[in-house]
Image (cartoon, rainbow, N blue to C red; front, top):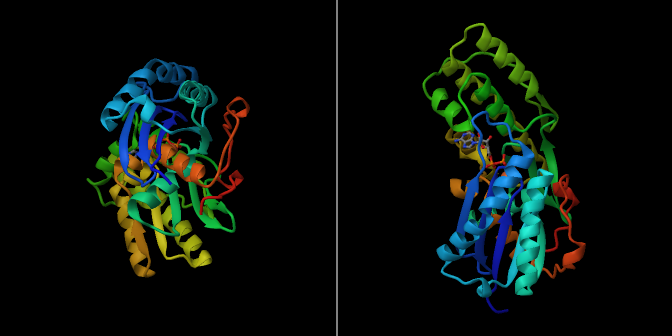
Length: 329
Ligand code: ATP
Ligand code: FE2
């Protein structure tokens, strides 16, 4: 098969991105811009307006980075879900417009699976358990009989939203993850907090309430940040390890923005070493939301024969990882 080039569009939440990759897995461009507010909470229509305003610039920047013209693109893919509807709509409209203009195939893809597949491509992990930890999502995912299945997940909020909420509460602004990580390095005073693992699932809202109470009572932000990370990440490592044991899998792959955290990476590495498994983590640029992962999943699905009628394609804000039939493995 001749070499194909796919242009992917990401717009599930804060980030609008355009990524370009070829069918050999060579990354040609990864350009994005994020909507931010001082307060941090996402206002869906405002984020969507941001995406609409920035889209042509991001597209041009991505083509420039790749050294390609629009006519060199063979496939268009976009994030179909899960995500925030008004944001998803902007990405889909743009993707349809481009696919029609160029008269090329359009492939809708699942955002969570894209995180997993780009990680596999870049780290060469073969059959990993993915610990996917972002703002909105916290899932332990792995392939089993035809689908990427969710073996564990958060029962309430995503770990990133949990960390960001606490950070906002103590006045650190958004995104809070990196700020909490810095503060945590300044303490090693372990304060006992709620530890909430239920079978293969985790929950963070009790931990969040407790942290806020301790902050109000005067505990130092450094020791709270340190203890927050130690508890939340231990919970995530525990459920990941349980999934690996259950599935008899020997690889752990990290994905999602919270995976940029070096303490989480370190804890995962220790767990993997202890059970003689391999640990994989792609560069930060491909952990946080990016469109190159959307382009790569577009390539995989196209090569597996996925086709669709542009007019029938729609967004799917609540699409789950295990809704998707995996035909490319
Ligand atoms: P998704 O749509 O997959 O849920 P998202 O919109 O939440 O993604 P991501 O870029 O995957 O976006 O993740 C953002 C989260 O990552 C934020 O909660 C942010 O605080 C967190 N984050 C970023 N860097 C770090 C870090 N160094 N340590 C901890 N958390 C981090
Ligand atoms: Fe994401």
